[in-house]
Length: 294
Image (cartoon, rainbow, N blue to C red; front, side, top):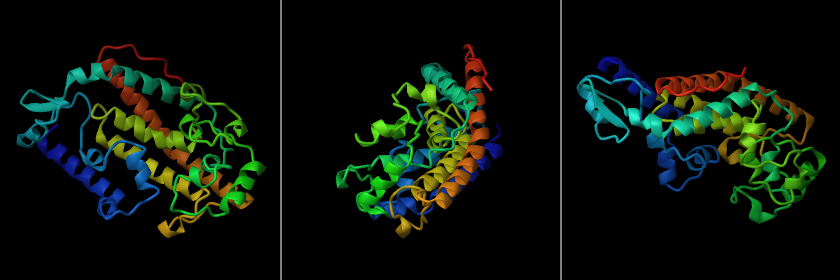
């Protein structure tokens, strides 16, 4: 890739990330918290500086004098007068590529479930008292008793293990499924808000083998999904400018399903793109590519 092309793409990527996270780093340095961005940079371990760093993906040689900017990165090596992602990195990450491809193919092949209404956040505080609150400084919209009553009145249908594992002990038996770590491949489905959000995790875990534009696309989806997630939560987040999706009402549940459907539509091409990146990486490394379930 010519220096002119890749430096333009690098600058555009940095500007895009700056636009998405705004003054987050400045506010965080002053001790401010944010229920959306804090989650994306703490639960997900990819730091803002890592997200902002541009990578072209595996197999691309960056040419020109500015390519020496990548000389200090352990994941890069010199090649044909430029720099590229180390070929040996693909072998070291092979199992992660194979796992990601298999998980995303199985998720894509499954029928969507749009009937969970975002109850996972409610199940995380159900009958747990003050100690169960994941946002301790933020009040519950309906109080503890009102929150418990909502969970009691509805069916909990969570299919996402990484949400289920934070359920209170009282909430676990209320879920339609008992989920375990292996449940990711067996139960992940494309209607799940968290399955869409996790495309960001799976993409950055493969960086720099995967190009930064796709990682940024997945981050933007995760930002949108986490916002919906928090709006539908039991917390009063009005101080953060987040208006509630009142899933305790029929109108709120309908609003949630519309938002969930929109997120699923946005996630579908990103999931396919990440599957294709994984398959291309395996082909490039001379490895066997799994079945392409539709």
